Image 1: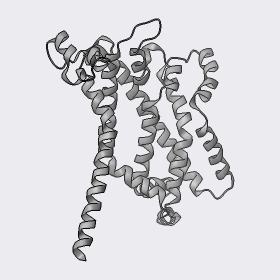
Image 2: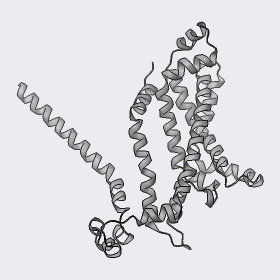
Image 3: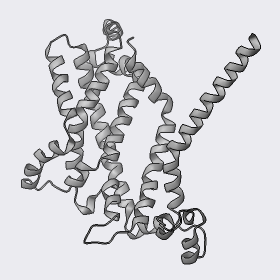
Image 4: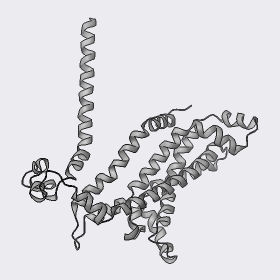
Length: 293
């Protein structure tokens, strides 16, 4: 009986392991294929005659003399100055996350500790704005930005991204603050702390995983944004996603697809390492926000 149960247990483990491995292969294949293809020429990566050309590098060998080439990366980063888009993205993301988290933690704490009914309605209004498409919100900013000569600059985009992102950070951080007993900050105030000191020295260390989780989602919103950055930034101040789109060209201007492929890989690599580095804090923050303390 015990032997049969042990065999069933091993079979279940093997089955679940197989499903997990299959999911990992399916999920990682697009990235690995794009990474592999970024070191090929366009004739191989987009070969219609035989997709095996992308594996063996038939046209890449013919054009460059080797199975791999870094022409896509060289063209994107040096010829088309993709590094400027990376720098602009870093500036936009940094200030968007810092401002969003600062306002979100202060506002979320105030709403969580408020006993007034207006706190609920403020969160409802924030939820409505969060549900609206970004393009509808951006259109309201265009006229004053053009009139005040603010269009095309990075600070303008940061302001709009913070405005779009703020309802999300308020909701996320508000839920985290609700899971922290009021006794903590009240005890700190009894011991002589001011309200802000209790917030900074007692509450924030407890909910640090929640702050990291919210900050990561804010980072992803600003990092991957296309609608806001494409509409509000000039060609000289493009961030990575609009810059990648420009590599594809238009009906009037021919683009270079391999520049876009190399740039896509360059944009995905930092996200991979970021998730791997903060994976424990992310899991801890998500579970803390889902369970009442």
